[in-house]
Length: 308
Image 1 (cartoon, rainbow, N blue to C red):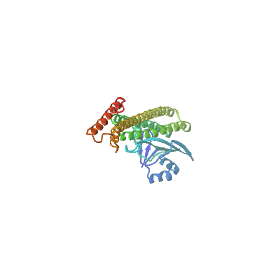
Image 2 (image 1 turned 90 degrees about the vertical axis):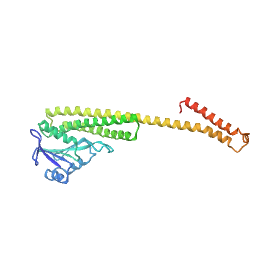
Image 3 (image 1 turned 90 degrees about the horizontal axis):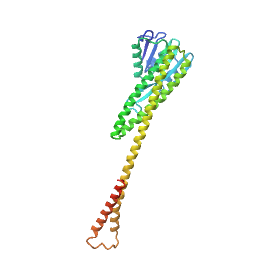
Image 4 (image 1 turned 180 degrees about the vertical axis):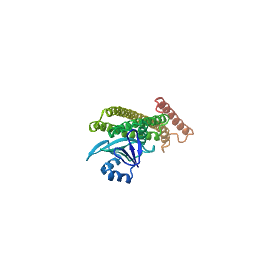
């Protein structure tokens, strides 16, 4: 799906492409791809790079065309292995052409359009739009990080009452998501530092870049803090599980040792040998008393040692 936006004096949707408009392409179809490649002349491998979900944040020049790939946050199904991840957003520019391409429909781009319409200012140029997209991505990283922190606190609360595999798996998923976030935010920061010297930046852009740096730094630090908290939490519950396992094994070992003594007494008196108690009536009660006495003595000894 493609949408054309007039970016002067606000953000307004228009019916067809005109020079200096913003062309937004979301989940491109074959018709959208043909339009971009045949009518606008975009190199086909630009679109292939954007379609690669593992593509890193970077920029590239080719025959006057400039491709910028920005990593933005994306939420998949909560039951997914990594519910929070990042995807590439492609920004393609050349003179009077400005295009964004994303192979997923994201809340960030919907909110970006809505916010720019509320601002009512539009964009001064394509460079201004690029840095505003950087700013929007940083803000949305912070939003997603808050959601991750909420899920983290909920899982920790559940684990405080009962250590359950489902909550441990949920923490593992959040750990994977934070790894993707940290890597993508760092890549975006590196890309931004390079673009400052590759794009024609005016005074207004410089102020915007400073805001972007602040938001990205905050997002990176927040992601790092949550990752450290999560690592510490996983280590803590791993130690608790090991400690509980050790306690169970210690108790089972103690029980086996205690049960070994009456078995030993019964085996000794049950051997087919003459021991003087075969023919007397009190032989069996004596063997039982010896077994019970030895068991009680070792039971009291183990309790005193807090082994059971």
